[in-house]
Image (cartoon, rainbow, N blue to C red):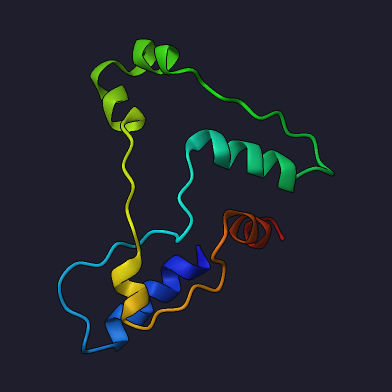
Length: 100
C-alpha cells in the first residue's frame, strides 16, 4: 500500500510524467501465491490458506469469474524507468510491511 501511495504522489509531483503508468508491484504473483505467502508470513498466528478452485469461482460468479481468473501480466517498467524506486519490491517485503 505504501508503494502505491508513493507512486501516486511521485506521479503528481513529477511534471515529466504523462500518459499511462501501471500502478502494480514489480513482482508478479497469482492469487494462490499471495495466499500461500501470506500464510508463511503469518506463521505465528492462526491462518488457514484458502485456495478456491476455478470451477467453484465459475459456479459462484458466473461470467464475472472470467475477470477473476484471466491471467494478466502487467509491468511497472515505465514508472521504474521514470525513476520511481519501490520500497517493497517483493511480495514478502510488502506483506511483512502490511502486517507489522
